Image (cartoon, rainbow, N blue to C red; front, side, top):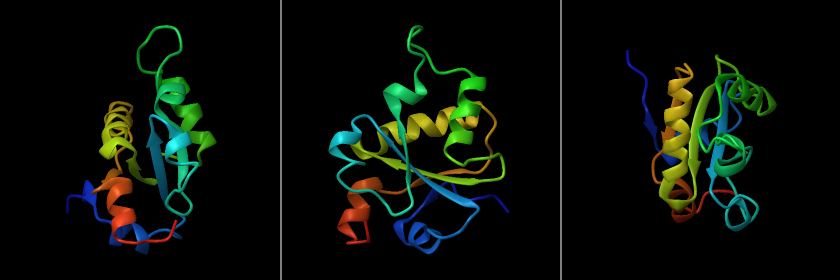
Length: 123
């Protein structure tokens, strides 16, 4: 059976305490999003600072990606659920990078921050 790539907010809410699931907010500007509120237990990945190479204006390499994932408590066996600011733009960017570097179980929370807030879920 093929895994779900897009999950709804109800699915995320039901898996917040699942030790094999890591919720990740990917933001362009965490000062106006993550640091204001975020999904409980979500860790932050900053698009500009964490996913882009500081000199080459390119993606970070696989070794830096692996170190970043380790620092966020993510292994190859973790189900990763991404969401973020700007209607999930940067979450989808991160999704592509996860896939490019071989992470199989990565998903997008449908509707992102906007849907979570609209559903009046805990933050």
